[in-house]
Image 1 (spheres, helix red, strand yellow):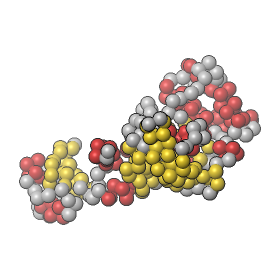
Image 2 (image 1 turned 60 degrees about the vertical axis):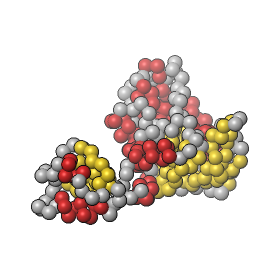
Image 3 (image 1 turned 45 degrees about the horizontal axis):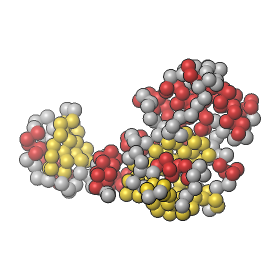
Image 4 (image 1 turned 90 degrees about the vertical axis):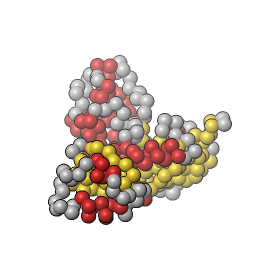
Length: 298
């Protein structure tokens, strides 16, 4: 288990991380979210011992992270760092050796990962010949080829099209099933919602929300109601008690409720003539919560 406890880091007068605490257990994914400059990358760098914390502790199974354990950490940095004039194989085999992998085992694993991540190219291709997406896949291979027990992914989906983002998502889910401890940052709240067990939301280095993703959403109440009722208009919905505002969405309407309890009476109203195609009452999306919390917490 990774435990971060009361971590603090300042650069001059700027406090980058303030009293940050969280744990990650084997088989868990933690999403670390926040605006640019919120302290996410600084947190990763402290865990990796690239920079030293001012105070607080970072432990692995109750002990400071040893050099041997650091060799079991896979890291995908936000700023990609491949050598453009070297081949895929040269870079991967070199890093794999640093993490204790046998050369032949690394070659075989590289072939497997090239197929799994659907890299377009051959192992002897120079990095400078790869597209941005394929170069990012190679960077992901560098982070994962030695089967790390703890994985840090800083904006792994940045710049990826939906298909390749889906490949990365499936890979993270598989690593989770295998028992890896994973922490990642992302500006895409849909990705965070889909694969995170827990999240920490930072603003200016301070934690503004923390906990189970669905529990956080539920704590804001089920105040989003999507309805498809062919006989009702936007004006009809706006006139209903408890409806704050109405937004057209596809063939239906999204109703923003003042209180989730209004859903009961609205259900009776929209179904009084019988069957309707859709009625779904949900809490706010993580993206909506993120915007609200970032704007309101100073």
